Every structure is written in structure tokens, then in C-alpha cells.
Image 1 (spheres, rainbow, N blue to C red):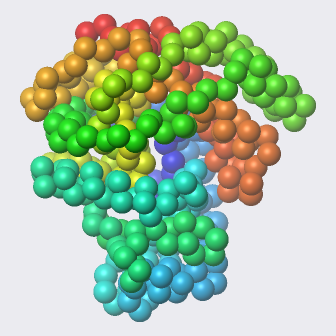
Image 2: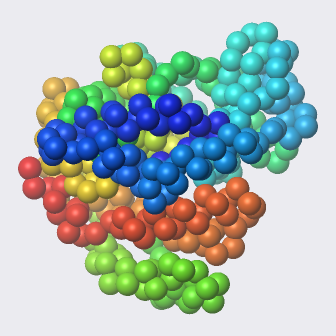
Length: 382
């Protein structure tokens, strides 16, 4: 699900709708602006364009404020300088809220991260980022604390900070053929680095819950009287099909970004892609990362065959396209199953009000646009 910023602009969304219209007309020349507006609203998890406009008005009227003293503590922890204004809210994600900080030394983006993203984990991402930047990939520079750390704990949460970059939006789905080609070239560049990694594949991408666990989750959803509980029940046969596609870990792994989804990049001038997220870096094979990438970039809201061909062409400009099979989607399947399971758990028993809104929409979104074996098979037909 695409996320609205904390201070959205309806003019900004109108531009996104026009950009999406151009993409839709690549395959449907008579597509209308109204269709593009409805499709964009669906990406943001609301039913139609009027509902999206109403959500924008609500957010503008009710923008969050930073807890007292938080901005000062972040500036001190990362030695950012003296604040010249209050922290501004940027976006709420599954990890927490991001804040825009301006000091006498510059402008910064402060982001909460999961507890498992330690300084050692962030260093893996920094290693990949440095090699990628040397190869021509655009990325913001990270702030390093006086302790020499990329991650610092502030008020009981892990935080990272990087320089603020004036970039555009994340790509809207479906992506254009030009955007798909650029994304393919980006992944080809990253995979051509071929940095060896002897760490095992992260447990989140390898461990799956059993069918009994999913049945128990259905029972919890029904007990909580969730309106989408029966939709979850209807999806269980498809989940069983996905569980049957198992991971066969390759002998040789390399350092991969592992979270380079459309939401993790921003568009710069002339369509250049700036990679904003590196902290999830870890071991995968090119085949397993591509299997995951295709599901995020070219399977939503449905399989984008034109984009798939362009993505392959862009990748092939840098590196030979590997042979993929259903097993190449094993990590993508595990990640999707765990994300879906956790979103439903959070929707049933949210941590706080912000997480409640996010998780409820995410639960509805993943059930509406479920990953299926048939969809994965379409990604192999090129």
C-alpha cells in the first residue's frame, strides 16, 4: 500500500494522477483521468478520488507534532548542530514516523528503524551503498554520530539520520516502461557489484508459519469481529499453494539491498532513481532478489507485462539476465506471508493509534491484492 505523507498536497496528487494516466495509456490508449484517479486512490488504500481528497484534508488539519524535546535529542545524538526550527512530520511507516530536522548545519531526515536494525546491520547497508555510489547509483549520505555509529537509541527506539535530498515522489504503480527499464538497470548495477556474503539468509525471509498458525489467525480475526475475516478465510487455499513453493538456499550468496521496492526510491531529474533505503541489506542470490523485486515493481496492481520486458532489457544492459523459475520467488513468498501475517496481527491488536490505522489499511490491502501462484507464473512468461 502506498503511504500518504503527513502533510500531503492535493496538487501533488493531481500530478501523480496525470503521470499515472500516461502510464495507463501505454496499454489502454482511451484511459481517462478519472480512471487514473481511481487507480491512484486504490494505491493509497481508499475507495475513490473524493475519499482521497478527504483524507488529504484530514491530514492537513491534523498534522502530528514531535514530542517535546525529541528533535533536540536527535540533533545531539547525531551531532547535527543547533535546531533552527521545530521538527516537521514527513511520513508514518511500519517502523514509525520520520521527521524533517533543520539545523545550522543543514537539513536532515530522521527515521525510526526496527530493533533488529543494529549499528552492525546498518554497516552492511553502508558497505553496499558505498560500492553502489562508486558505480553511479544515487543515494543520500548518512549521518554518523560522535560515537561513530549509524544507529543511535533515542527514547528507547533505534534511529538513523541522513541528509535531506530534494527529490521527487516514489514511482506510482503500474510503472511506465521507461521507469521499468531504469529500475532494471539499477538492479543490474547492484548485482554486478557481486559483493560476496557468508551470512545466512535472514530468518524473516526464510521462516514460514504453518497452516495451523494461519487457521489460528483466522480465529483471532473472527473473534475480533474484523470485517475482512471471511476474506482471509477465502484466501487460505491460495496461501497453502504458496507454502508449497519452498526455499532451496543457494550455495553462493552476495550482499543485496533486499528492500529496494518502489517505496524505497525517489525520482530525481530526468527520471534518475535515488535509493533511500539501505538498512535491510543482507545475503541473497541475484535470482532470489529478482524474484522479490518483480513482485513489488511489476505485479501490482496486476502483472505489468510491458514493464517486465523493459525491466529485463534494462537489467540486460548491465548484466546477463539469470534463469528464473518458481523457486526464485521463495523469498518473495516468505516475505509476503510474514508481512501479511504481521499486518493482520497488528490490525487485531495494534500497538497505538498510528499503527492501528496503518495496519488496518495494510490488512485490507494485502487481502485485496493477494500474491498467488498464478500471478507468479505470469512473471515468468516473457
